[in-house]
Length: 330
Image: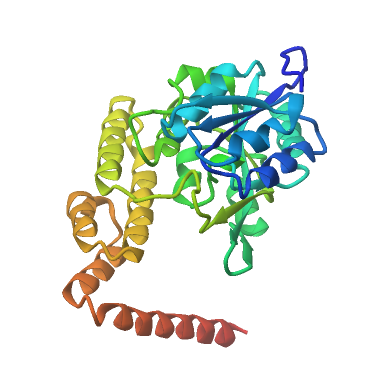
């Protein structure tokens, strides 16, 4: 596949892969099946010990294979970006997949809105072992936040509203990625979030397609984004960006985003029953967390065994109350 900047809207796909033999064919085929052809598919094999490289090589000239020693997804993505010759970079992890109109829909949006340097979209969550799929957000939710436009005014606000997307939906101009320094290779998690935040300081507007364009497979073995969440990395990430936001005069924009990030990661840590890590994050960032959330954490800490049951009962009562209120209004 010819990767050339002569295309008026050239796109290279960067796909990091590590021991992805079970799923990478699905990912590559989803790119080859696009209604708008991409200029290059660049797979970076990050030190796989299985048949990943062999499978990628079987596609011949359709896919460019780069092999490197294991260095993590950030280094793999950076290698792909540096090798790309296209104006735009789209990202796809080897265990996920795109829907057929992904590139066409995002390219059209970006061509209609030439001031934009990046774009996201809705996506489908797929719990692979449960055969359970659902859209990340509804069309109504996205359209309300977009306010009749095809882009969010501020990525940080979209992040705080839980609608900003993930790496697999992103299409970003290559020169912008280079401008912010690519993905940080010293982070073992959340390196993509760090990159999007650094872009958002300079380019707050981000295009958004309200329909799902990708499938995000969770609970996949050897997922490029799976692994142990290091609470200290989240601590360092948010602390560093609070300082950056203040230095750039963007604290008001960033604080809701930081609060959302802390709450999201605490929820993740809850599933792993890592109370000490949760306590550390709540104590350090409590000032930016909603009162209701802090009260919930206090119940969990005070009654680690009974707390979840108590909160479950409260949740049922709240849902019942809302239903009664809706019926009463009718």
